Length: 114
Length: 112
Image 1 (cartoon, one colour):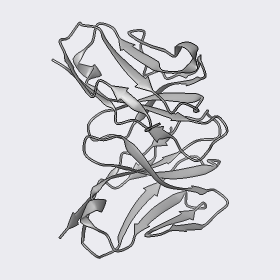
Image 2 (tube, one colour; image 1 turned 45 degrees about the horizontal axis):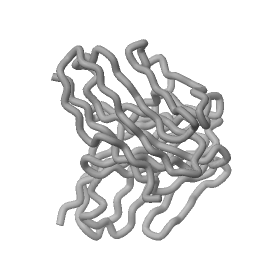
Image 3 (cartoon, chains in turn green, red; image 1 turned 180 degrees about the horizontal axis):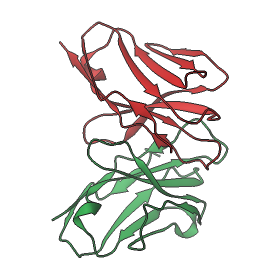
Image 4 (spheres, helix red, strand yellow; image 1 turned 90 degrees about the vertical axis):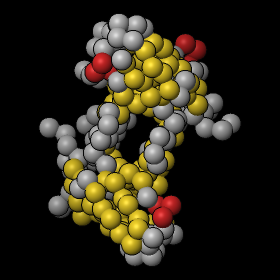
């Protein structure tokens, strides 16, 4: 297990198109998180899962955004009808439920909407 | 509101010590963290401190916590060019879930 894997690394899309990102967490981690990071800012929380249940969604996550984690393994984040303001780095992280000792982050997917 | 504040830039000479400061908001935060982000990469956990501690040392890293002032600092001894990166402090407010509140990050530049 080499850590948290995110695909693709980069995505360029035209405004109005739909995009989907994938995250594969560390296999024994039951918590999975999505964050968004815009240039010059710290990451902002979007949503998190415990196993397959989506337990919290940020107000940042408009109805154009949807996340899933079928079977409590990998997760997908879909953005419909992309807007230029969606351009950002989308970071996935995972952790054990009982751990307060930090997350393991993936390398992120950089989205550019043109 | 929930704001974790950091200074934006720090420049030091190779071999000197670096001190990165952070002011957090939730006095009930149980754990406070420091992450490092290199260009184009995700975040790497450097260290964390439990709120009942004042100091934690881990090799070249020293974390100091002043709960009264809600101030956290990260000292990097003998700073190397490979330490050039953005450093984020983060808290998990106990009133929330396990989501982090990150600062805006401090960009550390190490001059050879």
